[in-house]
Image (cartoon, rainbow, N blue to C red; front, top):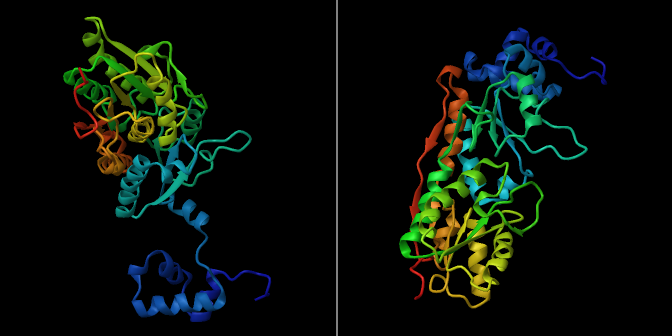
Length: 354
């Protein structure tokens, strides 16, 4: 065999005096061989420098890749830096492992770079997006592969796993109303991609293309509207630039600088809420004595905070797990799955001072 020609399966078979099918089984169907024979084949392959069957060729032969694509609309590092995303990822990865599936991460398409969606070697996609960009919907339609939404449907009426964001936000706001708060600040996620921290003139009616933003703003309005109709109340909405604690602290500044600052703040995530607490503490504002704070997610840092954060608990791990299970089921059995949430009351909320 010429030294510049890579070894092939037939070379391993010839060296051992077995068929190519037997060599293939050693790599692809080890249960079909005795352990001794498989060890002999793998040893010979290693000695000859044969790495095993070509994975792309195997994919075409089997008609499947054994991999699931996870589409996100954030930079790739978000999955590893954000605690709520990490919990969701854990559920996705666990069920992939249970089914022997690989996981391919498909980040958002960056300007000037090709989108990975058309070329990803996967059997289907879980779209961890809010919402999925129209351009990517078209790319997925062309792939003709199964897709399940995570947090929001890819298109209306298609299967997804998520929570009732509106009901969860309504319950969080109702908790503050029940405590007696009427001057309330709301810190929203960014209302559009790459926007800056800003006070939102339209308040809870602010236009946004994000499904969770819209649902949570509506939920806050459901609970706060009737309580404020009696007069004497006020709601100020600030859209944060990002999702980190520093973004929550920056969004709290215009609220706390207001001539009549809020007695309570609703934040759309725990990280934003923890940033609010940090900014209040820096100013000498007591939480919850002078300011109540409510988050959303119940990540591990929420219960460990000082004071411990009142928040909306949602089942991140289960969301990820159920989305993969749904993708692996027959298409006829896939439908929307709404998971439960609850308000977890801790030390960051109390009645306003009189």
